[in-house]
Length: 136
Image 1 (tube, rainbow, N blue to C red):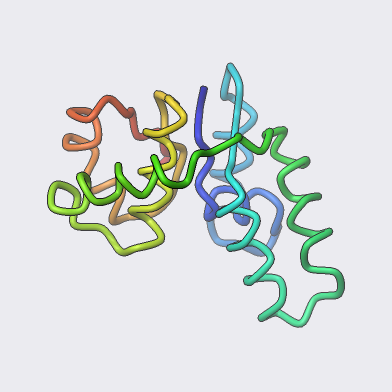
Image 2: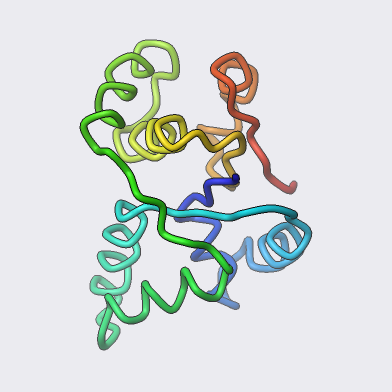
């Protein structure tokens, strides 16, 4: 199972995004189950709302469908417990940390992202059992 970071979803669906071509190649090449979380939906809805797009939640759900991901069932208490343990190891921004903690909590083995801060932590992510998947 692969957790798709919000930035990869946006890059895939937004043809004007600078990472669109990379996201298109990467997401089409992935084999296996792709998942996001309700945190992803919140983040997408927020991005679309700030862009003054109509029906931001519907657009967020459509975006998840476009990347062929399912919305994972997450025990957020467990995810927050993981976040507390991972914070001193990864030293990521809060939303990034929460996505990684959710990935860990649901047992996903890969984290698909274009986030430079997360990509820079590839070795540490590997040590906690998560492969960082990106395309340069």
